Image 1 (cartoon, protein in one colour):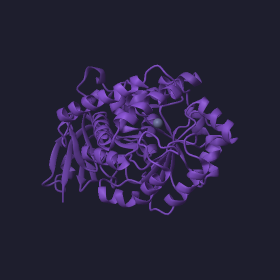
Image 2 (spheres, rainbow, N blue to C red):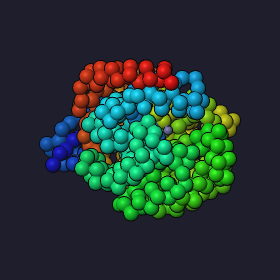
Image 3 (cartoon, helix red, strand yellow):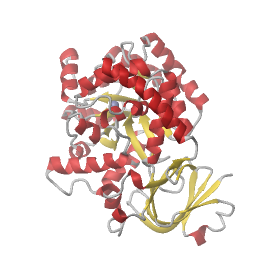
Image 4 (cartoon, protein in one colour):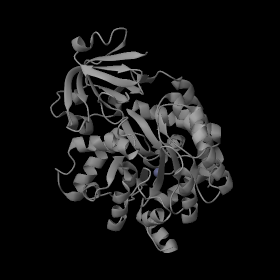
Amino acid sequence: MTKTLIENIDYVVTVDEAGSILRNVSILIVDGSITAIGTSAELAQQAEGAIKVDGRRKLLLPGLINLHTHLPMALLRGLSEDVDLQGFLKRVWAAEGAAMDPATAELGAKLGSLESLQAGSTTQLDMYFHHVDTHRGALAVGTRHVGGPTFFDFPGPDNHTWEQRLGFLESWPADLAALGGPQIPTSISPHGTYTVSQQHLTDLISVMKTWNNPLLTIHISENEPENIDVQTRFGKSPTQLLADAGGLTGEFPVVFGHGVWLSPEDRKLVKNAGAAVAHCPGSNLKLASGALNWMQWKADGVRVGVGTDGCSSSNDLDMWQAMRLAGLLARLTTGRADVTPAIDIIRGATIEGARALGMGDVIGSVEIGKRADLTLIDLDKAHLTPVHDVHALVVFAAGRGDVCDVFVDGEHVLRDGHSTRIDEAELLAKANERGAVAAAAADAS
Ligand SMILES: [Zn+2]
């Protein structure tokens, strides 16, 4: 039995149904689960023999859940600047074709996972090819990484045929079991409805539906040209196309990357399927893709989580920034300061993300019985002193530089800002080396 006691934490942002904030409590973690929350005196007996972590002058919240990203693209940060989505894809796909072999995808996943943990994000819904290598890389750093085979109709940057991709699909549940790691859904990532045909989507879905705990994630309606392209070619919206392929029946969780340009009819389909949208305001703003109307989506019954997108579009994996931008954007576009209370934004980045993954009972809040995916921030900072409104402090004042300790599945994977699993200097040196190869290819495209 492994026991850890995080002692005397100043503030715990639980993100439970009531949005409770606890003061001066300790949290006992036994074999990866939160088993008790109370004062250190109350927990003394149960905590006997536990490894102790000092929680004084710290704020603890559930690990942030990044609902849409492409981790290995951390190696491509800054290679495709000042262009729209379509211009971006041209340069990025050239860089990926030249540099992203399986070993490099694994390296990029390690880099992205380290950045994620250092930014307090414990779970990522990831989409990247060389999915086995990518998943292995993320697991090595210790994140709760949700990835799976990625699909394009065409060979794509990884240069695989459709038949080879179907092979990856068939073997994914067994590959995932062999890789191990924390509990996650068995996910697949068709890239988008403009890159995967309706028939191919139907074929993928018919296989994944037979799995235990499946999940589908796909880019949908990221910008207006995408909608126009799909509408022109197929006579329907991306959401309708996915629905016609059997992807919105409610039988399994579905997460849309972006979903900025969903029509009212699209939103009805999403709501009826219990599907979710990963709102990526940093990427949407930077690529000028549009402003998702969070309040309208919520009013229409669409579950909305928060994501960063990949580093090549939004340039970082900073969920604090994504939270803050989501809140500010909703206020700007509605002209109302009361539409996104900080607790709602935190819910989007934690429990709503967990529910979107079908894991609402497992992670996403600090409650007894949940797995211990926890982020601590150091409150001993000028910009975090004094504390008045705790939820507002988390969203509008704190940042990733304040993250000091992170637990995933009960394991202390980041201590004092550094990985307990890997040699960071060696990782960064290798990332610089492979990054140069990718840059040369992007420039030649
Ligand atoms: Zn994306």
